[in-house]
Image (cartoon, one colour):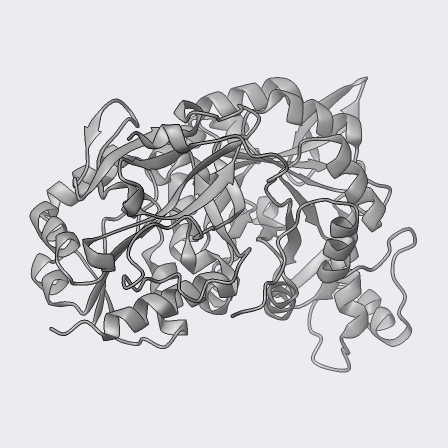
Length: 302
Length: 221
């Protein structure tokens, strides 16, 4: 008997919303800025990734924060080390310019590769990566800003305009084989003012592939709000999670390069950026569950 | 020795690391038929197009070897595309023949009866793996024997296996209003396929790999 006869409609058997910590990496540090500027050190990639995995992260997103400046992605060692002991998907991007760049990241442990800037000069890269490694490996990152009444794609870490509207870009990249969209609001990221719901709904409306939204979460309410009002598949969160980790970690010594003043202050005094509630992954998932949002939970072994 | 089949597709290193993490340090990544036949267990991972997978198998002269292993009592675990390749054929990119070990086809989500069109494709995320509908013999020990109820694993795919025989369906998962086979089994339980990625499914996935390896320890060469 054909299996198709056994398929049936199930109600409310929804797929969990993926909770995805976003780690912006500069050199040996995880950094965080506001609207992609003013990067401050918030922690060490290996420790933070391990903490997030333990806490129940569904996937990890690593972005090389200064890749555009150096013309390359430099996260290979960090990814390779993470892949040794972290058994959830690793999505990696920042400065990916070629099929070789993508291959190198995938070989060192990345499961998905994120590309943005290079696609505007070489849109064929999408099909090249999708054909070589599968569409599911090919995440197109869209950094969007609201300019002159439209949402426009930005490149180079939010520094350069492209003149291309977000909705037109989504159509183009999906047609070329993008398997997933990573959408970040440049205006909101790091601010804790909540997700840009108009932007999120616009992209979710035009994209047939899953959408991961990033940029602006300052409290669990922001996450609940976007999940309730748009068909997102995942939420990428940086500040809320990083500040929670910072507060529970002591950094007395061993801090090297980078702007570490913020990190020291947070460790000693619990100071974080105004408008952002430090929140751990378990705390966020608890709040999501309370309001009926499906999340992946730890289940007890038999 | 555990052999991971290297088709040049997908991240075989992640699979190796996961096997090492659960205690096996004799893992070899190979495309040599002799080594595969001699292994205590074989893992067939894969990511990408069905046709590319079959072509990679043929280019390496592994078609007969993999069919023999899958039909024997030598443990074989197919992951993602590796599971799909066990089927008769796939509709991905036009009709393409598979290894023909499990009767049935591989179809796009949108072709499954009951698919509501609201589920985005590819399905990327965590889905509940439900073994309660498994109708195969209880004596068929399988890698899901320690799977906690309600456990989820990580899926990333656009095509699904549609086995003809219920007895080959080890677990079901729901997506887009439809239920589909998320794991299959044949050959007395020694050949298993997972649509999800156990090497990317956290502790639940590692538990499945551990159970598969325990089963493998019973295999007497």
